[in-house]
Length: 90
Image (cartoon, rainbow, N blue to C red; front, side, top):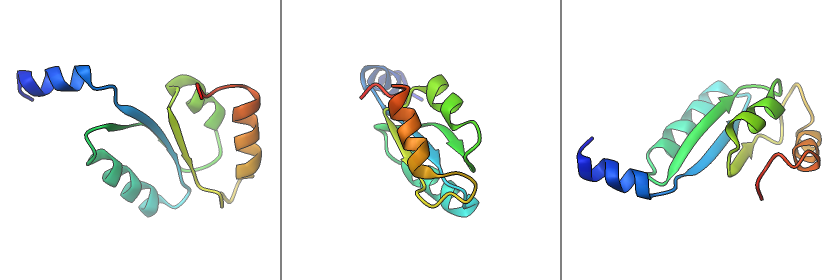
């Protein structure tokens, strides 16, 4: 990375994203697509409902991209828990 690219990267506040998708191929595809965007940064990626709250708390993403059809957890319950605990900045 050139000095100019590093300078631009430091000035640009990238949008942090947490990806939660139980289908591995789809999750990896989403991550690959997001990584092609210079203003986006995948801060964490999970394949199931385990440790979502800890991942949100630790990574403090601006966006949580959540699979609404998770097999092992209720996605709506996860959203309510995240909002209830005020784990997101907005």
